Image (cartoon, rainbow over all chains, first blue to last red; front, side, top):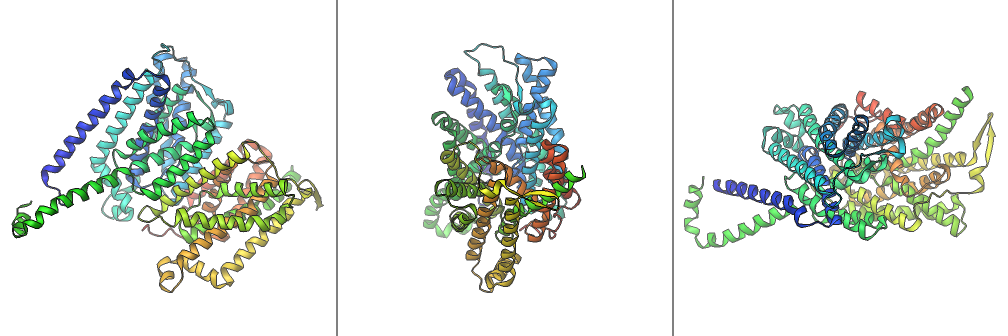
Length: 347
Length: 293
């Protein structure tokens, strides 16, 4: 790489500043915009952004594409619903159940991971789909999940004018936590091991990475955040029924978001969620015939895969790098005699 | 009770023939193109709707209609492969193609919803409701015809794969794509035609599914694809014989559990899948997994 030592630090500083700026804008957003339709879409977007970042922590970094994360989303939703009903919780206290939702999703993800992570590639994808259908069927057929009519959330007791705000800030906190976790993992030894597995699992194993614990840890972390997002979503929507709590479109949506922004990048899934989820919600609102939004989502997805196969962030980064290289190469050609010395001077 | 069990086994075997046909298409596509065509479920539903349109609007018999729907589905399959699968390149090609197929499935589902609406429809004909008395059981005619047709199609596929020059190029491509290319096989053409054949069988499967499932709507694709995936993974990805055996095994198991609890019968598919994979990750008849590229 031709990056000079100072460059990374400057970029990292810029990244931190940009992240703080994004968080600040998102934090004041409900103060500036009070339109309930907009803030409803905003809460939904935060939930999906957290889920997309969580999905990326496992699938993006490890290369194991999971199409079954709706299992954890639905588990989180049902956990909050059942616990709130059993303990007669309402109002703010329901938010205190979110860690429990994450915990139950984590507890479920361990056996599922131990089974599914024995196989790779296609088979893994299919196993995760199978888990998804088992979960949906179980939610429909078990006695304590309320069957096909589902489970109702306690009604929040706060003021109607700022109704969405508590959901918004809890969602924002979850998103910030998920992104921080993704950032920490990406830079850590653990993150390196995950990416080594993605690039070549057998070689990684040969170099001393123990694939199973590493993959499983990422799977569990991802499940925790997804479960909490599901719990928040449930309280916000007010109801969980099997086909919406365990929704195949959820799986597809988070994958589209991650692919759109850039699979395995830090900010890609976030960017994808912030663009795709509002667009999708807007389409659903404006074309109440939901089938059109399905067609458009599919078409958008195909366009992303065929047109930007590596996602927005990596493609943009490449373009910027190419532009910089061209700008640098123009003076370099004029100063050919000094090139050798300059090369030696570079560390 | 004993009688119920015999009936369940008969139902399972006859129904398994149809699932076998749909699963063979899926496993063939996997073997040659190394992708999972997740749109197979909705394509079966599309095939069912084509049969439905022909029989309701043009009054064409379900089996005669196959002469139109099978070539139509073949063309659709080739088009999907050519437009959306073939252009994919690079390291993530396998997972990308799976997602592309998922997107195609969503679009087809949305179009079917817009054209036909969410109401359940059923394919009808005189032989759908009539039945024959055989060995003391009543077996619906459609199951017998459909089973015979499925067996004929699987036999035809077998002959195509093992007795023709094209079949030899398909099997060569399944074994080693680079080597097949080196000895002069047009791998792109083989891939397109295989995808077409794999989708064409969904016309037959869709007609049978539409006539025997007791009603279908555009949402039925999810249930179908999940069963088909369970079947081909259980049988071992890329193994045609494995897909046949797994299809009959799964539908029979489902029919048996159905006696005890209809609600949980569907889960049998996935529980069997999980159990098998815990013991044998490559499936019942699968080859040991090759090292990932």
